[in-house]
Length: 95
Image 1: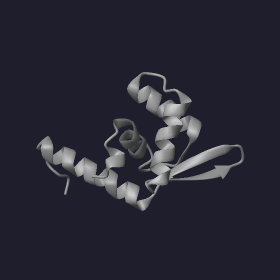
Image 2: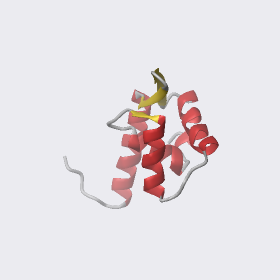
Image 3: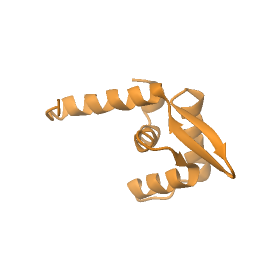
């Protein structure tokens, strides 16, 4: 697994982006609800910047908002993480 996904925050941001592009504020709101806590913008956007620099997430600007999407390497990493969790929890595969 990539060292960049060893952070729970970065990993969970990728999970939230797995099937849906989101603007920065919508993504921040979703992760804050998940953790039931507020993230400082520097911490939150720092995690996104690291994911973008390493190629897991891409960013584009739409109007006044940055929109984030998972890249193919990001998708594969989420899938590998899910498979590992499924194996460790001895949860049967749906296939």
